Length: 102
Image 1 (cartoon, one colour):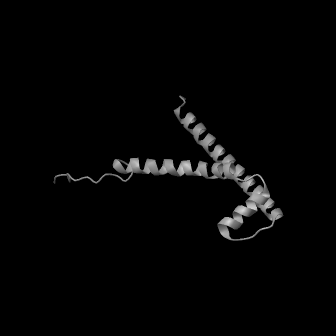
Image 2 (tube, rainbow, N blue to C red):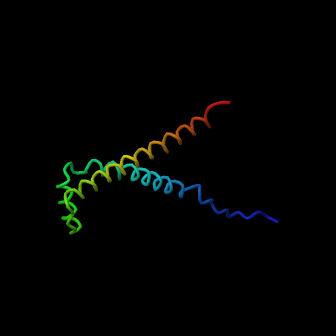
Image 3 (tube, one colour):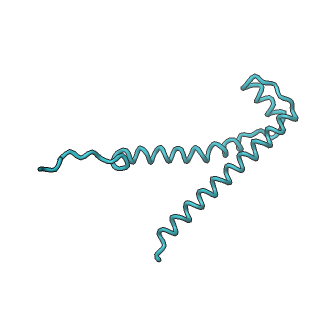
């Protein structure tokens, strides 16, 4: 019996690997840009945040509530960035250990 000359490429090789790499890179970039962009665009005063909430959602919130929401968003974004840094450091350390000679 002759071997089948038509071989289907694996899903993890060839042209699909570059598309997967681009998607993975864009997802990784978005994971970093979302909390960083939120922190960069966060208004400094709670009254401005209350105004933005009212402008974009139509909901009226009090200034003290806007202050709590602002601090809550800051804590979440900083924690998110901290987790991303830990994951990146752990992945880099894992790569260095696999490369290091034994």
